[in-house]
Length: 118
Image (cartoon, rainbow, N blue to C red; front, side, top):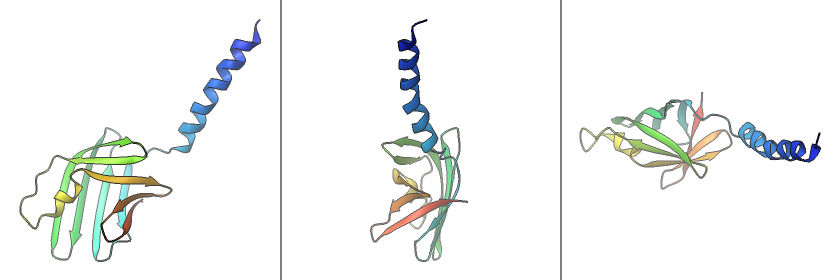
């Protein structure tokens, strides 16, 4: 039996298993931390859909849509249209979240906040 093809196959398989072991699944329930006076909740589902809610002072909003991962970034695409000018659900339209250790980071313009899994 020729060992070279078997060894080659084993070596090719190793990086794939290590990469998948280092990237945990992202689906789950997240809460926003690090944003003063703002609360937000994000649910990423395995089927590629999400639900989200946000509150800031007396304004709030909700969104539903789809999500995908590209280049260490979670992209949210909301399918919910804001009901009014004070509806904050539009914040989730085309939102990009950087995948960091223990955090899906969002740039709020005046600083970074994190969605952390609960």
